[in-house]
Image (cartoon, rainbow over all chains, first blue to last red; front, side):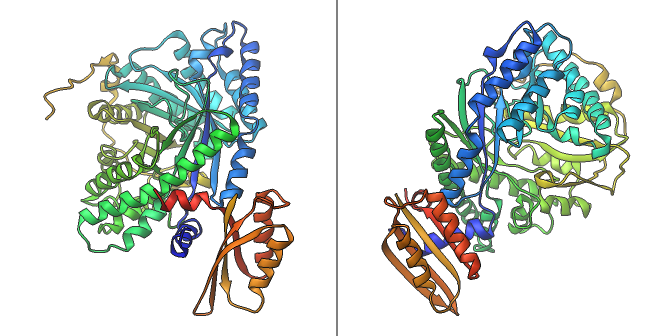
Length: 452
Length: 89
């Protein structure tokens, strides 16, 4: 039998250190829902999602109750809608988002991702229509998340799309101005997007995936933080080992939940995403882990190195605990969703330039960052271009989820509530990148040798 | 199916009998018990067999939790698998 100490360890992790499964995400292919009549296509989409995900929430809740482990979110990701809606004779894809939203509400999930387009090398007519529909789609729906992949290591960066996305983000903010630009919190611009990511807002169900699949995202910044408190002052070898062991345990739990969900739903198990996903709750912060390593405030010199160690150790520990690892896997650094990041940004220590450096070694990118409402579209595009370049050159996923909060200035805070938290408005450089973004075209794919 | 029942809280008369009576009432067999009291803090861990339980397991867990709340205790029943997964390779 498992001994009492181990049992109490697990219970303390759940009770006091916010250990949870962050999401069970069902990936559903909608490729077979394409139809020349957009109304028929939307009906097929609604029908397929509600049929496939009918038991998703109930199953998640049952597992939660039996294993005593919180499963915070149940979600759905679907085939990038540009690929499905392309067959329909219509100019606006907003009704597709509405159909997704209705289906998500009918089955009781809290987000549905996949209002997406993949345009890393160039855009089809459908991709253009989808991107043009994003602002209205996100303003009119509640649960739909959108994403656009504008670059990859193999294709380079589509700078035309980068330019368009700066304007799209501005438009999203304006259409949801009353909610602080909330629409932007549901829109991610990627480089090297992955096809099996269970986390929102960037989840979509890739074309290489089966008809339906279960992916699970674990979490556990609080557990790692707690473990590191036990090794104060010890060398980094010990820190890395401690993170690895903790990540291993957390991931084993995620793997168990994933397999159980897959078995009960009769849907194949895809991957476990080994991410440290923070929440705004005290004691569930990635920034506080970095500070625990010896930094006075997250964002000061040393932060990038601390994050690099953390990100790598999480992967090393988790990878042996799961049969299939995928998604984004690593440490997330969303500013508004992390109590320590919020505090660091408020104190002025953590700024955008440092966050950009941190994204070179974290699992994703510039995430949930509020900037002044008068930030120009070109500046946002330039931020996206910088971030995409980091992803492209380093063969990693990078993303930008940025909110130019209407009417807000540096020092203000935008409240989103719930898991999305509150975002301190951070300063951006005021010098223009207008002429840079106006060039358009493509940044060629980088060399894969001579790596210096 | 085997499960772990844990009871945590301030020590008082009758905790053990309450939990055991409830488990017996629903036909849950206790396989092993360990119990300690640290500075008036009661900690009991039980391994139980819930195969013949007359309730779905989730309902049993909810019932125990409720029973605990009324007595200012934290009582939870969790499938044993979660602990095995986390602590055994």
